[in-house]
Length: 65
Image (cartoon, rainbow, N blue to C red; front, top):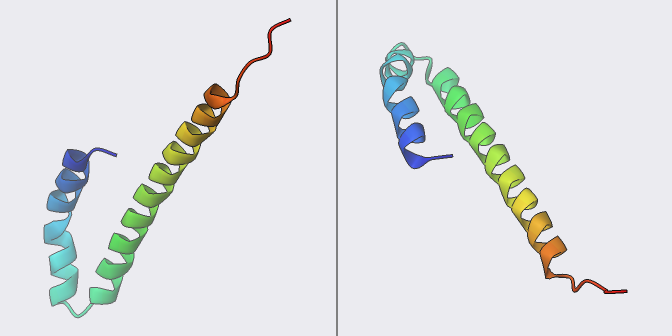
């Protein structure tokens, strides 16, 4: 995920999360941030696994008949 996209999402949701924090509902804002970063992590891991899988296929020497 692009860093600009992540920053933009965090900036847009900063005010509502701060509002929840001020209303003594900081656990909800923490949970939402944790879910957001979990989704980002899962997407990055899928990209990494896919790239690693493609690299391992290319690294094997091919047999010519």
